[in-house]
Length: 243
Image (tube, rainbow, N blue to C red; front, side, top):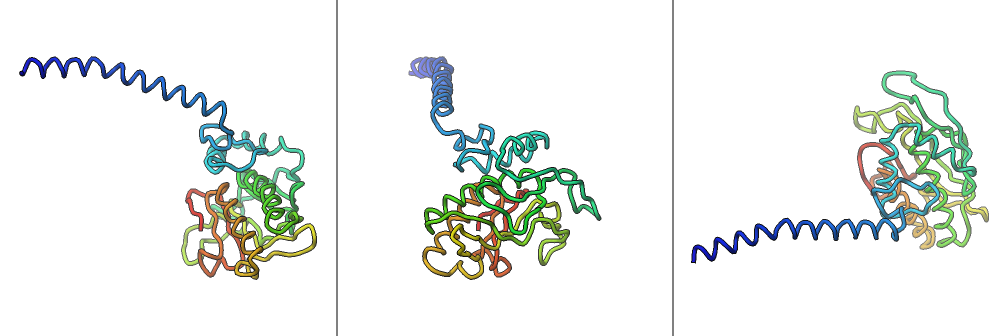
C-alpha cells in the first residue's frame, strides 16, 4: 500500500510541470485574444489613447501617464489639434506650492472653460480633455443638447485641505473645481441648484460624476460633504475616491 501511494505521488509530481505549462499557454493565448479584440481603453496594460472613449481602464492608464516622464504627457496633449493649450511658465512662489511643468488651458472643441486660462498639471489637463468630450455626449443624452462651456472655481490655490495642515492638490495645480455647465441652447446647469433639481438635471449631473470617476483619481460631489455642495472636485493626487 505504501509503494502504491509513493508511485501515485511521484506520477503527480511529474505531471505538475506539464499542467503549469498548459495553464501558462492558455493564459498567454487568452491575453493575446484580449489584446487583439478588446478595445484598448478597457485594458490596463495598454497606454492611454487621448482620443478614445472612456473605458474600464481609463483611470489606470491616466495614472500610469502621470507617473511617466513629463515629456510623454506633453507629446500626448500636443498631439490633439482641437485643444487650446500651451505650456505654463514655472511657478514656485512659496514652500511646496506651485509647479515646474504645467499647461494653461482655455478649452477644446467640445467645450470652453469659463473663465479661460486655467493652469493645470499635464495629466489633469489630459483627463479634462477626455472628460469634456464625454460630457458633450452625456448632455446630448440627458438634456438633448451639447455643452458649450464649463464653469469652474479654478485649479491652482496655495492652501491646505480644509480643516487640516495637509497641502491640497490645488496647491500644485493638480485639482480642479467645476461649478456648472452652459449648454449649447443657453441653459445653465448648476451643481448647487440642480443636484437635487429636475429629474433630467439630476441624472445629467450624476452621469457627469460617473464619467469623472472613470478618469480622475479623486472625484468629490455634493454627496461627499457640505463643502462640496456647489461643485465637483477632481484631482490626480495619490488618493483614490469617487463620492
